[in-house]
Structure formats: C-alpha cells, structure tokens
Amino acid sequence: MARAKPLLLFAHGAGAGSSSDWMQGWARRLEALGQVVRFDYPYMRAGRKSPDRLPKLLEAHREALQAARQAHPRRSRVVLVGKSMGSRVGCHLSLEEDVAGLVCLGYPLVSIGKTAKVRDAVLRELRRPILFVQGTRDRMGPLDRFEALRAELDVRSELHVVETGNHSLQITKTHTKTTGETQDEADAKAFAAIQAFVASL
Image (cartoon, rainbow, N blue to C red; front, side):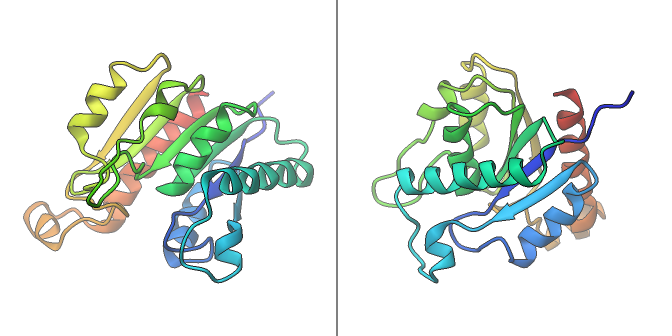
C-alpha cells in the first residue's frame, strides 16, 4: 500500500505574502508532492511591511500548522517548506513540533546590514532532516558558510545549488545565454531535488 502524500506547510518570506506570484508558482510545483497549504503571518495580513518579532511569527506558524493538520487529518507526515524568513521560522518550529523534515528556499543564513548576523544557532539544534536550496548570488546565503555549517550539523542535510541564482533563486540572463538553461529549467532542477528529498523522508 502506497504511503499517503505529505502535508507541505509553505511559509512566505519577509517581503511578499503567500499570494505573491513567486509563492503561487512554487506552490503549484509542490502540489505534485502532496497537500500544499500556504498562510500569511500577522504583519502581512495587517498590511504592514515590517515583520513581527520571532515569538509572534513562531506562534502564527504553529497555529497555521495546527489548522492545516485539522483540515487534512489523513496527511500524517508534515514537511515545513519556507521562503527565506519563513524557512527560518519553520526551523524554530521543528524544534517543538513533530515534523518529517524541512525544505528551505533561500535560507537567510547571514543578515545584510551594518551589523551582519549569522543565523545558525537554530540550525545547530535541528533534529530533523533539512534541504537547503540556495543561489550562488545570494548574499544572505554564502555557500562557503553553508558547507562549513553542514559539516558540523548533527542531522542529515542536503544542499541544492542554483547557479547564478539570487535570494529568490532567479538566474541571470547571462547564465541563460551562456548555458542555454532557462529559469523554468533551473526551477525544475530545484524541484527535482525537493522531490527526491521529500520522498526520502
């Protein structure tokens, strides 16, 4: 008997909500893997630009998970998928909730600004498998830092690299001209990595 497909709770990043074109596009891809549920954090629902503090984001993420589980009780396996900030909050939530794994699309490992911070503390506490999907042009996700960090984690971690991808995994026109690879093809490769990771959970 085939396993039921998982529930994928999909959290948005700091700058755009669950209805953005980017979120909708990735939600459509992820639907091939299971039941996708998107949600908005309180500040986004209120129309504010500045994200809430982590405790409020975490509580909203937890409430979204509980609601999704109630709406889809047959989906026993849960995978937390997040874009940037949403992936970081998902990592925090995974320390408190029973989930199968984590998929991080552009994890914000390093903050940009005068006081750059490395957000690796929660990753070092993880107890669930994690997949990072990162672009080579993402200033918030330096690949050398990810490789060093992954060597120190106590959990299984995987990394899919999007060549010339930015923080939203968008590749450059020069890359397309040089290699012939389109954005759709780059996204398809990233999706294939996600598909294999989710199947392994």
